Image (cartoon, rainbow, N blue to C red; front, side, top):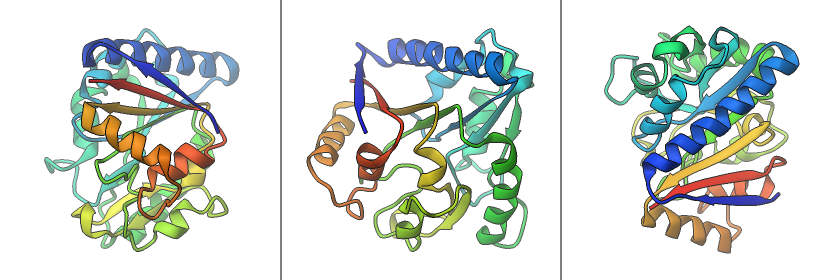
Length: 232
């Protein structure tokens, strides 16, 4: 694995550059095979990037958008990543994209994971683009320290797809793509902002205990180069 650092003066500059890079990758995928797929992350960090990407002049009808992970909450919840993407990315030209939500209106998170795996794996994997975030605890996707299924989620031999995750630091039950679903993306991005996140990243790069900081699995074992986009 190799990582490449892209540093920007501010979040606006980062959002514009990242949107241009992602749009180019999606356009190339469409030109090459007729379709493109992207998995994005939630949180407040990607909002400006989402809005910049939403106006990219690509054939959005041929793009499938999904989430790297999701809380097991309905779309109208303020905690929903689906809501975040709908309000910030699936706008203008990007409203024509096919969106696959992870949350499903079923009884439990495990059942939802099975449904989404069947929807996504046949049409969208491997992803052309994956955009990850990172928490101050070193989690990425819903790979949380102490997660009940963390070892299986990070195992490269676990089949690609979506699985359930419960962890004390996660709040709600989670749905997350497995490491094997994300690590081989055509373009693999880690998008972080702020000095605190840079310090967390540096700590992750200095160690190798993935149970302590699951982001280390991506940084050390991903088969695709990790492009780190950072702004203070």
